[in-house]
Amino acid sequence: MLPGSGKALLFDIDGTLADTDALHLEAFNQVLGPRGQVFDHARFTRELQGFSNASIGARFLAGEPPARKAAIIGEKEAAFRKLIAGKIQPVPGLMPLLALADRAGIPMVAVTNAPRLNAEMLLSGLGIMHRFTALVIGDELAHGKSHPMPYLEGLRAVNAAANLSLAFEDSRSGVQSASAAGIATIGIRTSLGHADMVAAGAAMTAKTFDDPELVKLVGTTMNW
Image (cartoon, rainbow, N blue to C red; front, side, top):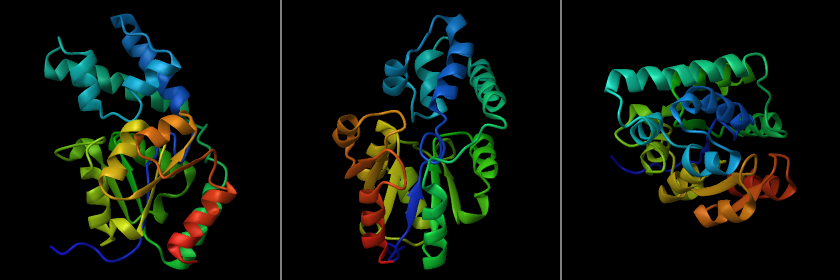
């Protein structure tokens, strides 16, 4: 299949569209804390944030049989959904950016290592499910982030070219995934600082989607 020729905007979900990382940290500590794994913010950003559940289970629940491992990770995700219910708020500037992309006919793709149930809950909670042409779930592929496969799949889904597109990420593994796929990546600083994002491969970083530098870069790249 020939590579795509169009433009696209590709977004991680957790910590990028909505600032959810503190609640994920709380849910992990609820479930893994009694099993001897307690995380502060720094350890969370290094060892959990942006990683697939398969890799988290393999690392922190290595002694458990597969069915039990899946059940424990399921407990964590249920705890997170309970914590986030009714509290889903977009990162400032997101909605105007999505509206601009819609008006310009630029396809948008959500690319996440989160389970499908979580991803759909967050997109629905933000009221933006309809804006995304495709939803790519890392755990449903042979490789999740930090491998480039999820973003390559996102590009393929909308026939887009990496060098004409932009990605938005908040984690090291996510920035690595998108940039390894050849997509210029904007780091959203909900959890990590500028230096960490750039070290992972981000082209630039911003605290919010209404940051003037971000708005300018997106407008120039998308030609609107």
